[in-house]
Image (cartoon, rainbow, N blue to C red; front, side, top):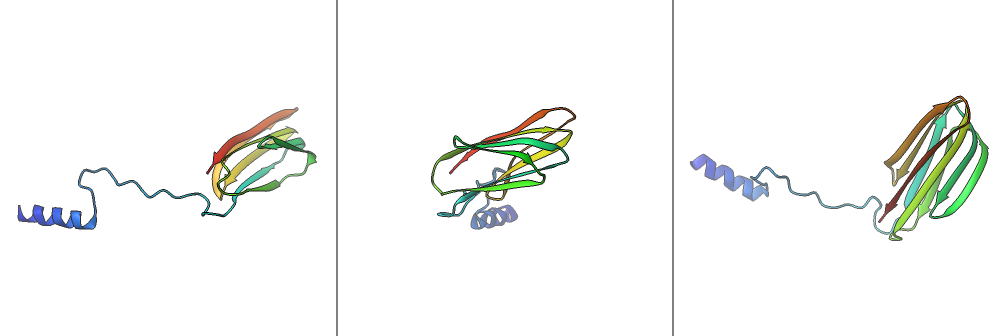
Length: 128
C-alpha cells in the first residue's frame, strides 16, 4: 500500500492523470499571431494542361497551355475569417497531381490521368 501511495503522490505532483485519458494539448494556430497565412498550390505530372483556373474568395484567374510543374503562392492577412479556393485543371494525355498547403501543412490533394480531355479539381477552405 505504501508503494501505491508514493506512486499516486508522484503522479499527482507531475500533473499526470490516473484515469487513462490524456490531457488536451494546448491549442496552436497554424500561423503565428499577426503573420499572414500562405496557401500554396503545386501541380505536377506528365499531362498537357490546356487550362488552369484558380478561384480564391470569388476572384478567378485563368492560365492556358500551362507547363508542368506549376506552383503559386497566395497570402492572406491573419484574422480575416474564412477563405475558399477552387483549382480546376483541364488536361489531356497524361497524369496530374495537385496539392494544396496552408501554412506549410498539407491541406488537400487531387490526382487524375487520362488520354482524352479530362478535368480535375482541388477545392477547400480554411479560416482563422
